[in-house]
Image (cartoon, rainbow, N blue to C red; front, side):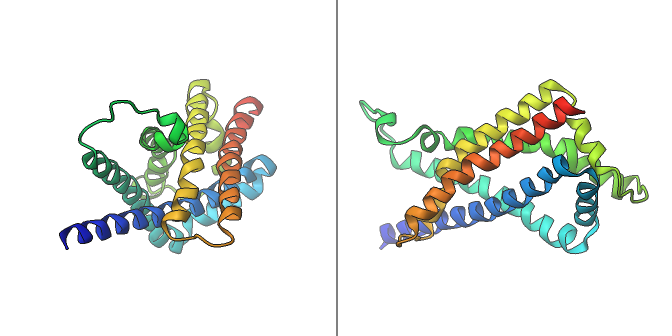
Length: 221
């Protein structure tokens, strides 16, 4: 009975982890779409950013939910990693991980830690200045400031490089994470192979677009 309860708890944790991952994947798709507008039109990017920056639903409902989703996803990642390690207290005498799983699946915790560090940089670059601008300094709204603020962050080649490396590791994280999330929520049907392929394309295209955005603003402004 105790073993069955432990197994059910482990399954629930994996499902919760998967659902939070799918939620964050949805956010990534929205985020890269908005940022890519900055390459196409400065004015449209400013309008879209201003709308999101002052929309009450986004600021006071969706943004806290997103913050909770990020924290929950990373906490559950650490919990599941510790749980898996505890389940195998004795290391294998000989273990060839590359023969059994991809690099991305074997190093999810590493890519996750790098992404977590990147999020810290991203918050420092964009979220904290935004909070200071609107709520601490109480500066009057300026719908034309967003493009300039974005471009300014990519002047520094070191910062641009850090962003690009983080996006590449995000791709590795998504390569395994997308398919694993679908599997954890029970998508074992005739569409599972198609959805897995969609996940692999997402893991390549979305990080690549983020890299393109960073490099575009670094070399063109």
